[in-house]
Image (cartoon, rainbow, N blue to C red; front, top):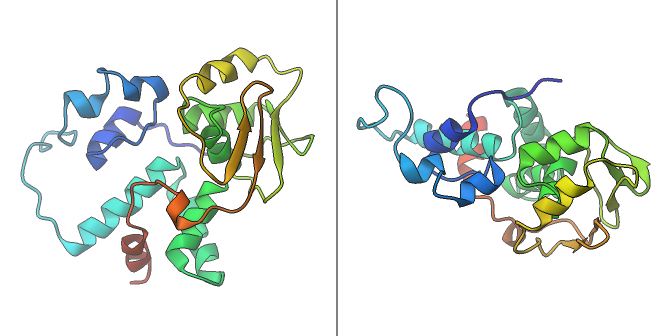
Length: 206
């Protein structure tokens, strides 16, 4: 399975914004963005000309890193979003939000999306009572997500729920029983992803 192995803190510094890729560390004083708020590399503190293309590219990279997907897979999401009825940008974010690994993270069952992805890959979660170990699995309204009863990651999941202050309004979480339900598909107002999706659509439309 292909995955992004680049240093996570450098990804946040490159986007000059917290992407919350390392869970609890991102909430502490050890956060790289707090300590070094400039991009990584030899010329990180230099002045960069902000062209239209660069702004569009940065938004695309930010969204891709935020949801922890690779370039080819992200482009496939754009193609699928453009085929669907409605606003392409909102369709794109909705497809990314309804990935199983993202939903596990949104429910508070993972301290970060990377941890949630790993838990899903190791088959610690059930969807409607059936084992699903595909992070990109698309959940649907009324789907019920639960931790497998025999899972050895129960304590890890419970520790992650302690970091959760709120759950997205399109989800229902029961942290005591470690279950969650998809109430509906998310609307744009429900998605707090810090990206301007229109810039991404403009980049791919060229």
